[in-house]
Image (cartoon, rainbow over all chains, first blue to last red; front, side, top):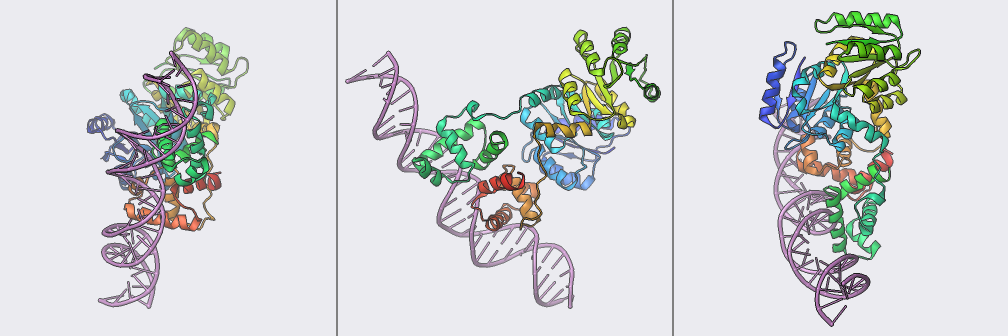
Length: 208
Length: 208
DNA sequence: AAAAACAAATGACATTTGTCATATTCTCTT
DNA sequence: AAGAGAATATGACAAATGTCATTTGTTTTT
């Protein structure tokens, strides 16, 4: 069974390779260090399983997975991460990840790989514990419980309509600069990068 | 590793015992036939893993699991069932089941057991596939009748993921300038003004 | 009335974005 | 081998975007 390992921490990568290759039926054809390498190495080596970190310098694991699954929908991708973050878990599940393990489960990774190889899906306990929460509390942050004030919410909605700052300003009788300021604080509060991500956030989480 | 097997179908029980005991490190101390027996046998044998059917005559697997977990919260219970039923999956997850496999995955049950033994959670693909559905169905975008070429569509999707041009470029192995060019033509074809409107368009019209 | 709190605005700045004209590279075909 | 067409890249540009420090009014609070 060929396992491609991708982690931006060299030590982790090498440790994994060592652990895995101690198994008679596992080979690690290459070590990648970020999402971009993952894509290239995957294409090159066609591994049975891709074992990849989520947070990495450069392209992250989720984006790389998206790309890889686009060309090879049967790709078996197993995420390895230091912590369990709701956002990531959901995205990973949506993507069709075969697993999501914590790095602290290091020693138990080999049976997990065999299970994945056999077509199963493997998730660490901390991850599974979250799933019922996610299921019962459909993460539909009602506008009311967003940490945003009236103006910020209004602006968010207009951004989600596709208006630019000037149009929003006219529409709300504010100056363009003020709109920018509100938008800026909104992005910070929601931990987003730009208006496009805000619009996406709106359609995904609020006006679902 | 001691595995207690509980299934009301005798044939299934014996088959499982045979398969499992072919492994050098697995023993099956007993076979149960319903939830009541499961509880008694679990107490008696203190197995490492309880492998149990969900639908059974008499007490069903989920109720038995509830009882067992009440006295031993660390019990590792793996459900084996003929079909994947949303109701059951959710309840099993809530209970803290370590896994939920389909009987058709029979051959792949051994690595799954090892993974569970190592503290992981294992779910069959059919089961995992349902989770995003339950969370909120993401449809496969119908992109066929758009006047866009392959590259333009790919870029559109990534824009709709919230990536900026540089990230898209890395992801597709193009230069940032090229990405901008494709994006520009996409916007013109769809008669949109900027990437935000494109993302909105995507969520409204394509992934609606 | 002074102080504090708030909403709105400004100006400066670095980045990103979208457009366009023009190259370069690659792949076929003839 | 030459040339036609594509896919991709480049460079230049204006506009839009996001961030930040600071300022100006306006309303509350004390």
